[in-house]
Structure formats: structure tokens, C-alpha cells
Amino acid sequence: MADPNFSWIYLIFFLAIPLARIIPRIFAKRRVGNKMPGMIQEKQPLFHVPEMTRPQIESSKHQTKNMLVLGELNRGSKTFENIQKNTGLDNKELDIILEDLENNGMLKVEQKQGFFGPKIELHPTDKGFKEYYS
Image 1 (spheres, rainbow, N blue to C red):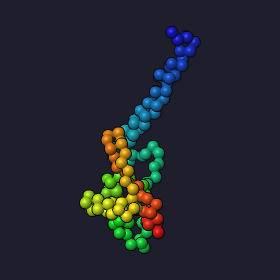
Image 2: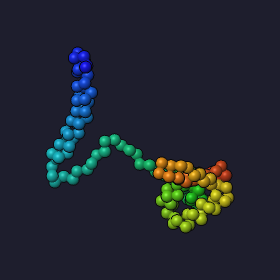
Image 3: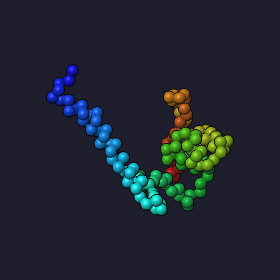
């Protein structure tokens, strides 16, 4: 059995800390609910998250579809789905481009064992990196 002189520690851990987190949330909800009904209420975020922007692709450089895909690989897209989403290419066209890049030595394909089964990751090689940035 616990020493009765230190029973206040249990109150802090099991009662005071959770209440300190819950009570400000309750007050914040009540403050939002008490505003005038005619006013448009905008939700204010708790903290500011800057928008992630992709680096601008140089417009002076002629962008072929191969270079577009190679650029996505160099920016960190590792899966077929991410590349397809960012480039807007259809399945067949993207598959042909990736095979072409792999045959030219600009792309390395890695098969890994994931939690839900095998997964395929695509990585640019040094040759692909140099080709894109030259």
C-alpha cells in the first residue's frame, strides 16, 4: 500500500493533469458558441502551418514527359501513385516512361517488404540526377 504522505502525487497525475488539458478546451468551445449568430465565424488554427510549395520548374527549359517524371523523382516522390498524382499522367504512359528511364540507367527500382506486403520504391541514380540538373 502507498504511503499516505505521498497520496497527493496520485491526485496530480490522475486528476490535475487531465483536467488542466480538458478545461481550456471546454472554455474555448463555449467562447465560440457565444458569438453573435449573424456573424460568420472562421476557424482559427491553433498554430500556423506554412503551405508546402513545390519549387518552380524552370520555364526556359523544354520539359519532356521523361524530364517531368525525372524531376518528380529528384524531388522525393518514391511511388508510382505519387508520381502519377503530381504529374497527371495516365497509367500506361507513366509505365512506359518509367521503363524507359530504367533502361537508360536513370532510375533504380527497389522492392521492399512493407507491413502490408511487398512495395516498390523508385529512386533516381546519379546519372538521372545529373541529367535533370544539367
